[in-house]
Length: 178
Length: 151
Image (tube, rainbow over all chains, first blue to last red):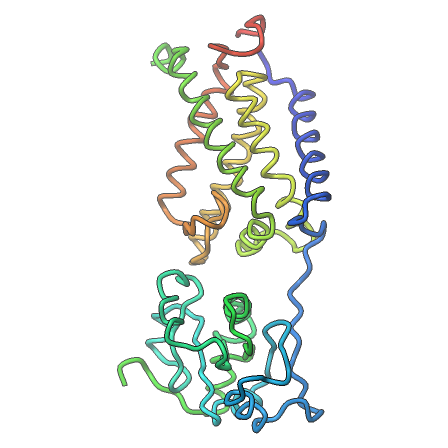
């Protein structure tokens, strides 16, 4: 018996239509076309962002601005946060972290999130966090940033320029065994 | 050898295994469409515009083909559909391994947290073998439809 391509096609089309129909009515359904994660940068030109405010908010029990998602920051903004001792989290694999990372950054590889997530137990949810990875070709910082925001961290920044920009600017770095 | 692998009980067993795995995998994906869409996207093989189309339709094709296979309905056609999907999965996993991507497989939804790796590749190759044999020899043992199509 040969394969009946008519019934084969019918099975594929009917199942696909069923999927599309159920997705349409499913409250957890997804849009037909996937939207690219748009990074919203923290606005630097207005007074809504400055380093002093970060410190105020960190110490404040009732922070004024509520983030609705993890926000992206530029190199300059990342450096000013670094100078305020804001916690940096390295989303790359541990091997890369070992070779070199932003000084005082903590390793939380996104690809092994479950294995390393206990590290978050020591970090209060109110603490601002900066997630970074290699640089613009790498989206681990975005994935980790979103993940941290969903885990309840209220002030998550994504430093998209990442390790490459940081090194080029000659900002403080260290290796794991230092 | 052909006699052994075309044994109706053995083919029935293959049908049950492949059918069950596909129903199970499909249901897990259906329960978390957004997670599965991200999992497909992480492979970085499909353009963003069609990722969700696959995330929405693929799990249903898996479930329907899996169910039909278990009930012995259009076994050749459904095992062929499953074989094509398995070839695509195998290629996707192999390419990701070759590119050194350490990403979640998404094979059984995203909650299991299984990464792409050699084991996943072997699992898929075993299923592909079963599925290919079903397409080749058909299996009508304990089938819902009559065995008039028996080859």
